[in-house]
Amino acid sequence: MGIIFIIFFCFSHAQQRHALFIIIIIIKSRINIHVHDQEMSTERGPERNLMRETALTGFFLGACFMFALVLICHSLWYTGSVEEYAAGVYILCIPVLFHMSEFLVAASLGRHNTHPDTFLLTHSGEYTAATSAAWIEFFLEWLLVPERWKVPRGTFAGWLLRLNYSTVTVAAVMAVAFYLVRVVGMLHCGRNFSLLIETERRASHVLVDNGIYAVLRHPAYFGFFWRTLCSQLVLANPLCLVLYAVVMWHFFSCRIAYEESVLEGEEFFGERYKAYKAKTMAGIPFIYSRRPECVCMCVSLFA
Image (tube, rainbow, N blue to C red; front, top):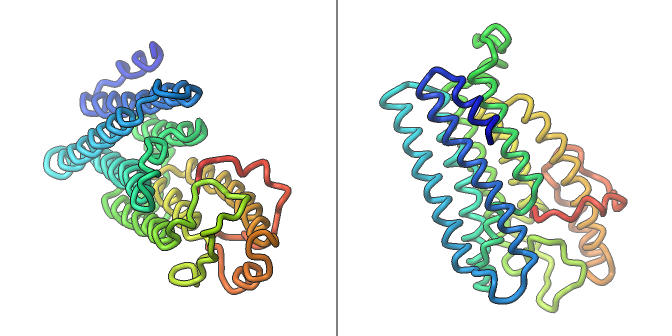
């Protein structure tokens, strides 16, 4: 933390220092919550107070929501800083909306799902690292990268990869729209939906092939993939945009291949699922064939 505070005090612009300090607090809080949850997850019995964890997580997300609104209003009516606007919109539309909705959707599918882990706030170290990387790139480009190194604003690439109010707003709307596809898919699937791939068929398990599933066989994956890419357009992070795309494509290509190999098994839906698969799409580029050798990748809590 000493290095972080040295970097923090090197910036002369008061608003930049204030914004950077707040983001550091948010990242540090996420890391601390993750470490705490990892320690708590190893415990069994009454030591883990689930109601307290749920309340604290909700309070944390509520505080982030209010901070995001302050940033947006401060940008629009006081400073005119598009960087503040982008940071506020990102916090509001990406982590706050995502984590609150994950919990609410899970809870609506069954009261037994009202668990602090269903916020997915700290479900993996990789997710925390990816979130931190997005903020680091955002602040490095904002505060340290010279203007002459950036893409010229008068081009399409400049409009797409340089912060401006229109790009931030359009990217945020797209991110929310893609995430709604995930939410609709989860709700339509109902009790058949699970955050983890189930390898044993339950008595209540049915093949859902109507509604949104008549077009997309994995709407939750589709929505998560494209929502995450749009999130990096909100912050105008070209490096994280490419990195996120590569990592997520590899993850979902392996996970989908493994999940479909399970669903095609005779203990699940067999030929029915093969026929269903042939008339639907995954919605993620270049994911076509089975790759069951990627089973080792399918251990995350992503859904």
